[in-house]
Length: 577
Picture 1 (cartoon, one colour):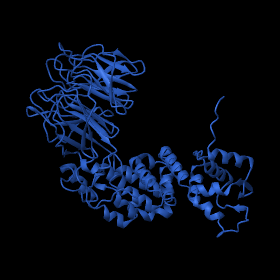
Picture 2 (cartoon, helix red, strand yellow; picture 1 turned 90 degrees about the horizontal axis):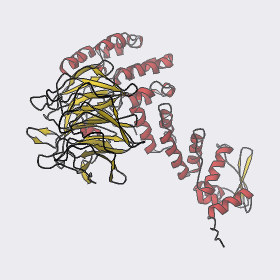
Picture 3 (cartoon, rainbow, N blue to C red; picture 1 turned 60 degrees about the vertical axis):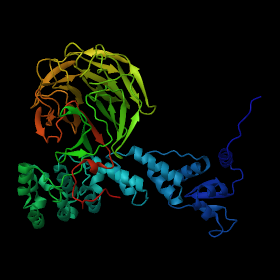
Picture 4 (cartoon, rainbow, N blue to C red; picture 1 turned 90 degrees about the vertical axis):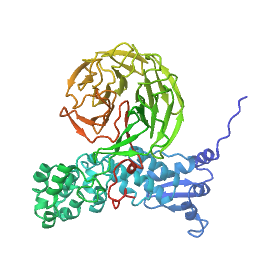
């Protein structure tokens, strides 16, 4: 004889509601009536308790009219009151949130806010931010504003952007946190907003133009777009405002950004949304634990305090779930299988599960939320094996071996596959390359590179895999090439300015950065960036530390980004609340 589980109280009450049994009140919305139990609704929210109390109505009253809500939304509110669940969709979320706020139902408010966070996009983020003016929820308000500033280039081209009042537009564009690659984006956004309602908004150019970091504009753009703008020319106050800008732009071009705090409103750079970290390596004959952070907005490196980090070289790093992982490496005495996790928010270190194998000259990348450590040297032999780390379980798992041993190779992730190129097999430098597919759990050889490359830098940018520099067995290299997975072919691209091997390589804002390394004579602190659209390399600011055998990664989403960049003006505002 089977034992039936007793339905929960909510299930019983809901059955009684649906059949109309023991109902002692009617909620009336427009022409629709809902039979309910007072005790259930009183348990859901104080609103109904007050509504049903004798202070508001006599005890015999049965019908209660509810204003400012539709029958469909009232149905959802009652369903939640009886079942504890509610169906939230894009079509009903705003009306449901307003009703939940009216009825003071915290659970439904929280569910609606979570839904809005998940659905946030450039087309609706301003509306969500504005919604929090009437439905106060600080967490959602902060997230919506951060989303607007982070995705400003997309947001500024949308329809919502044209509807915002000048006070909100000012609040957005004045922030250091505004994420724009070119300051011209801000100027063009202002012009677009004014031109939407020119008669009403033209007067606001006086308040909006000073929020543009004018001295960060290209001189030609300033002359062709700003000075010649009819909005600027028609306003004498604006014209006098920009009179000193050409000299400021010329000074930035000639001398770079000022070396002290960026107090000048025209020259203060925006905060970056991501930073490039240069970590560890070989410096002045010994491994180092030095960490430097590169700010792409100021073209400056900042030294990061690191008293607890262990010196290591020929290691790998990966940024995952807010942590930087230091993997394997060498400190002159020991080859490591250890893995350390560094929290850049709290500046604290933690040892996590070690790898199965000691790995110096290791190749490291991230795929599908896991960290892969591939090949390397264990102190005795070059390795063809590989393994991956799952942060949730704090465990390493071995995968299929490569087709040949590779130390001093480099790997990257593209289109859900891991590509590894070049390296050293213990006998010779390699030109071969292969990829790992986690779906088939197998390695597949691809076309070889055009030359042998050990100590190579490999990174994915756009839809291609780039292999840069390295050592061919005779010389350090400047050359670079890119792999097209669609055609299984390698093509040469522009060569670096400096020969280098065993350097750091990363992509930030669609630019390829190479950092430090060994140039054939000594370690170097030089840094270059590559623009795939123009096929050109150019030098950027040198690091403070000369180093090779380092590792780089790009870190983003830090609440304490100011710790890793040159200080902006101390009077600059924080993100809007």
